[in-house]
Image 1 (cartoon, one colour):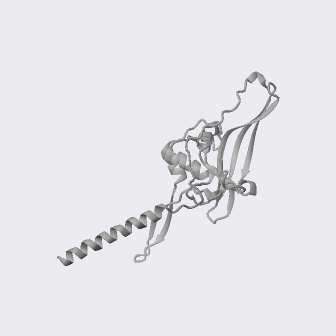
Image 2 (spheres, rainbow, N blue to C red):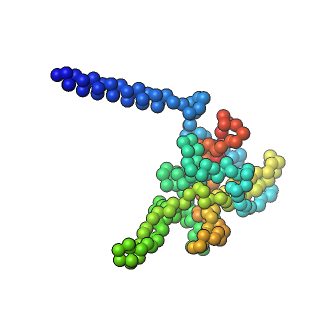
Image 3 (spheres, rainbow, N blue to C red):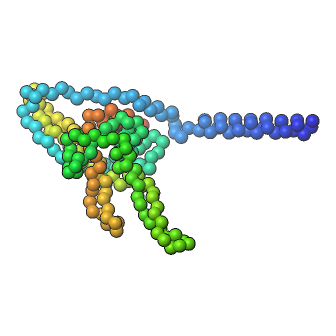
Length: 232
């Protein structure tokens, strides 16, 4: 009976110890206040434009280089952390996990930017999580053995974005507007010897659709941690 009582007492002490430890873990706050993340932020609508009021318009394609200092907030963090992701990781999560964005392929000629070829989930998965085939030698027979490994596209390899924009002048309001129509991640392209050949466009995204996703993800504000801005 004494052994049974000792066993019960030991179990009770262990249970109390685990409860106390978990309570201590839950009360640890990594910061001075509790940060609230509301994933239902609304997108500010664009002012309505009438074709009759547009007296000048120009379509522009330009490159956003994330290696430049002013664009580092779109590139970092390279690895996801608790409350922040890079722009490409936000896009990848929306495509593969949430399904809240539609990617459009570059078409059979690899230069289509008119959003005519929506990609299926399987096409996206094979593009962003490709399988790489390599060969190793069997230690017993010396024969080559095929090894298949998955090599996902990571945000660290996306250092440029191509933007498709319309620049407009509204004579009714006497204002110039810039409307981003599409955004295309550009992946660094290397040959078999590891020499960089340039950049390879992955797909196009319709930017008005992206705004609803970008508005709910914070981008790092290096001047003030208390005032985060969103990707939108």
